[in-house]
Image (cartoon, rainbow, N blue to C red; front, side, top):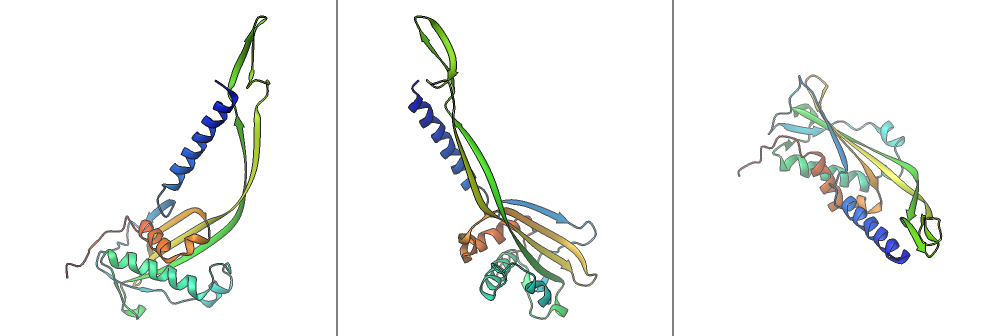
Length: 201
């Protein structure tokens, strides 16, 4: 097997891994926490919890603006209503209160890849082991800067003020994740374990 063939095989494996990563769920790594004493009843009314201005002033400027916040709110409204929950404008009239939090963190990953596989070279003096034809691997080191995003969606039982259900999504994000269609897919994925009570009308 030639050195160029080995490099081509390694590149094909890398492309396959990237393809598998790209086929992950829209919300990435999702974890759900559910109260054992406060149930989220399908078909319940819900409202957004009263907004705290101090939270927005401390938030990341990349998400602390009216456009992004409206998109996120619309995405979770669509996901909630698709499951039969009914939005009301007055929080005092709601059974459940919802809220969300978005956190963005800049991270750096250093990745080293070896190309080539151990192979021997044989001649009239015998065989000699080594990497490739020249006895050394080809090492590529890449520094990758990316943004790690966390989205938390909470459902609180209004009467008691206790957390009833929480979904947390964690994954790499980019500017494309701020698109409305993408946010809709993320919200729907985060709420996939909520019970459904889809209206028949």
